Image (cartoon, rainbow, N blue to C red; front, side, top):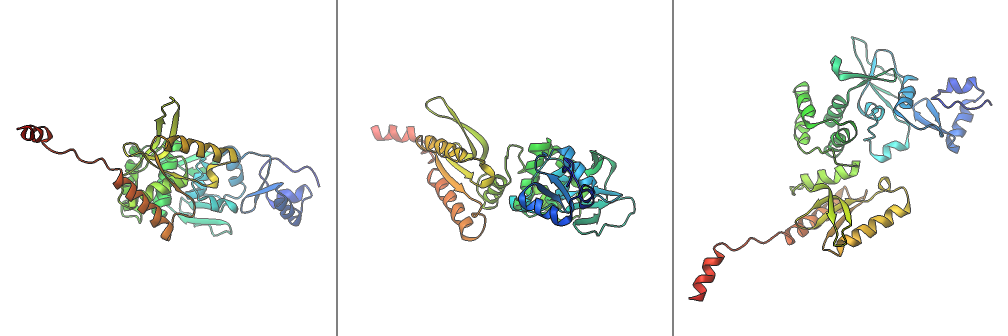
Length: 315
């Protein structure tokens, strides 16, 4: 076996350096190779830069095809898929243009789509739908939670603005999901920093509760500042998501607890949402708790004509 290449390879490429398909499977199990796409492998020491992602796609991209949807997001550096979806190699989402038939190869989701010239970018020799087009396509095709996460992520990572989203709306008129897209554009926010943070916000909105502030900084009596993912400043209520994607080391978890303890001492109330809290009774439970604590901490209305009443009492 020759030295493994540090560029994206197919099974044919591996065979040329003396690696059989069975050996390739063994190297994947050992973690030496990472199966990035169906049929495309990459050495574990090679970082997944945008250039390397484009090179991976170029290995299997059909002619006359444009990368779209989740694969386009991935190529553009916006990893907006649920974390569980990253456990397997990505399928390739493509559309064919110029009168060519849709692709039906294994590992490739093909389709047809009307794309304008400005809606097609080129990265590393690969044609891909533009950030704003990709975000709107996905927001029409996915459920509400994931749709908002996509819109947030493209604003955060690619600098897409609400104005750009709104200008794209006429292109989607009459298309399934357009009504959802139009509504969620108004809730999209570049400050969201994770998929599930967007999910939490979407559930709060759909429960009819006030939209919390994002990435709120709070100053402690000591002068130190602490940041909250989603918060209601006036009522001192914070909602935060805890999950594996939020923490890479145990120290991060300890830091979160220290931050929350410091804020609890000055009156903040925390609702912590985990990856298991987005369905059924557990979803209802934390939303009910949030509704209740917001009502309990609602500022009471001042009495009208209080001064006049005091004057009458003195008489």
